Picture 1 (cartoon, helix red, strand yellow):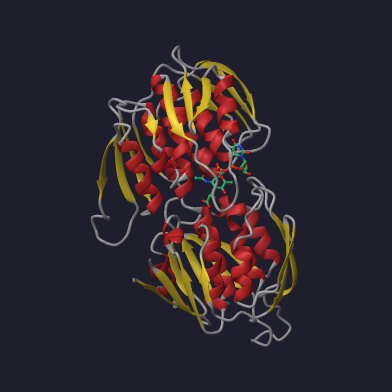
Picture 2: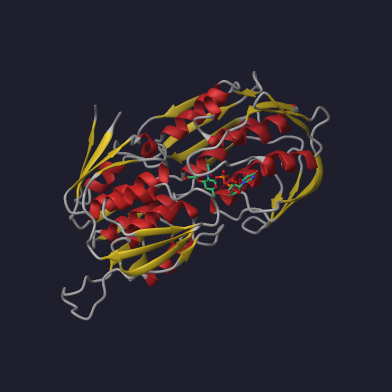
Length: 438
Ligand code: EPZ
């Protein structure tokens, strides 16, 4: 099982190319089930989860062809052509769904395209039970008949899906995406109230409209979809990954460096920019993306200057501070001056990184959904640590970049699900980081 070894203390300096967003690519790939024509997706990241989605779609009957590396060499996003002329199977099996929760995003498209679906319940994961009751409830509002049988969601809509008003009791990215895709082929008008406003939802909606859907209110929490008879193919480029960009922004900050994030879109990162600004980290738009520079450490050419400052943050649905950056922020705060209060409101168990960060010397106290992080500037030391989920893993990478000594991270397959060529991108900016292949 691969491990990553980091020797900390090197300020990151240089440029990092930001890849296409995993959490936009996955629903966009599922949307290919909605049409018998070809959907071409560009700027797809090279990630394990993308491969898992291709396997899932292939067993539903989707033909996929992947254009390889950028013709001029170098690493550009994948170009993937997906065509589902005919859906040959409507079951999403447990052995695929258990590996990747986003597999549940085939439920809406299968139901809309062929009136039936049998999708394994995704089950929980490290960060929480992650039920799908809002996906199911929303589809029932549109006339689907759904029952749970043997750990599977068995859904039928033999007469097709109907119009209706779906009110989400809490904001759910996946439920919004499933309902949005299902609604495009419904007979009538569908209203989604309290819909998720994440940019990845907007990316999906924009692509669906390019395919002939009629979606209004994109970017708001109230989406109005007028169902159409069929959708056509299109050619669509996936938006850049704002979570990856902000993760590398914090890598620059925790090492006291300066990095330009190529392709990052500052307008998708406003909450992060505001929070990091309070921590004395500057994110400035450039012609190519975003330039990140950490505040001067005390004693450098600005004796009165402050290093990283502790800040209080509460995670929230977009446009609030993303839960997918909570673990990374905690690592950053472990090296800041002062006590930071970090509150997680989206998932019930998203502090798995805490014990591992504490093994590296972080001073963290957890009380329910809130963690108090007492940074003591430069107080982390390297240690062997364990990755538990995608974002917890990368918070250990950030800590390792700042820690004195050597950090070895085990179970890095978690990282490979969401960070493309992480070691390459970081070592290209001066980090001492290598993958140990056993
Ligand atoms: C998406 O997960 C992302 N994954 C997650 O990113 C992200 O953390 C999350 O949205 C929140 O932004 C993808 O887009 C593939 P939710 P999703 O439905 O859709 C509860 C990463 O690291 N809920 O918005 O599964 C749920 O338990 C991943 O890239 C219900 O109770 O998240 C959670 O507490 C991790 N019933 C809250 O809502 C439901 O039917 C928000 O979940 C659905 C969700």
